[in-house]
Image (cartoon, rainbow, N blue to C red; front, side, top):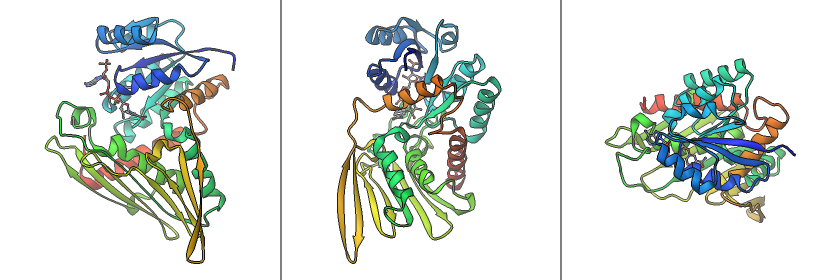
Length: 329
Ligand SMILES: NC(=O)c1ccc[n+]([C@@H]2O[C@H](COP(=O)([O-])OP(=O)(O)OC[C@H]3O[C@@H](n4cnc5c(N)ncnc54)[C@H](OP(=O)(O)O)[C@@H]3O)[C@@H](O)[C@H]2O)c1
């Protein structure tokens, strides 16, 4: 790729910094503009990352000359307005997960991208991890026989802080949308979208009325099952298993960006295991950024790795889980 792509970022939080760190790993990427709700925060960020354009409102970024793509890194509840703002000006968008607060918003974003013929992708960085891609490839190839179970967890202990976006209901707080999305996504990558009738879920709630723990099971035809656990009330292993009739694939902690897989093959009552390693540079966000630039280079309006149909199915499944547990925003 010869062309250099000019990136913009909306929202100057934790993930924006990691993403900006990783853009530096890509010779074809340049951080060109940043926008914040505060001009001072945008200017501080711009100074730290050598960014030529800094704005004190999100709206201003669409006026920036020579901007090729915007990464939306605001809290969940703002993804819709931030993405719509850029898409309506025909600026390609990489939008953090969860893509939107619900499937209704997701549909509108996808519709606008289609109508304006502009690139849009949910930033499901796990899908670009070589370890994750290898695990899916092994599962699909029959290397562990017929896959019947997928299970994963994602948990960390966070003291209740009503000011944190994770506990703030108006910002889309709660375990499911923030981290439960990963176990849901894994289940769907292996088995597809679950039928809403075969989703079971339960949650416990904070005094701020968001879920601090959420568990789910998806039952699929032919004796296949997926289970997931997300919590901000305890540190959990953050590991994932794909289990088949002939063996298993273990994604080491933290599974959603792991560098190690253990593949087991059953032999009578014993098993033989082997390790596979997938080291990567930086935080790992450059892998999705590189993919986005390749899509733009090819003139694609969506990613073949994270198609918008998958994003919509994911949003619908999260809606279905929320309905089961009584979590409405
Ligand atoms: N892919 C991943 O691995 C990953 C990891 C972490 C987070 N995320 C996603 O990225 C998004 C941002 O997460 P984060 O951890 O970076 O959050 P964060 O540290 O809380 O930062 C979010 C930023 O959004 C802006 N913002 C706008 N309105 C806000 C409001 N009312 N309250 C708080 N902040 C507001 C703020 O920046 P300005 O005011 O300067 O604009 C803030 O710094 C979330 O949707 C999350 O799910 C993804």
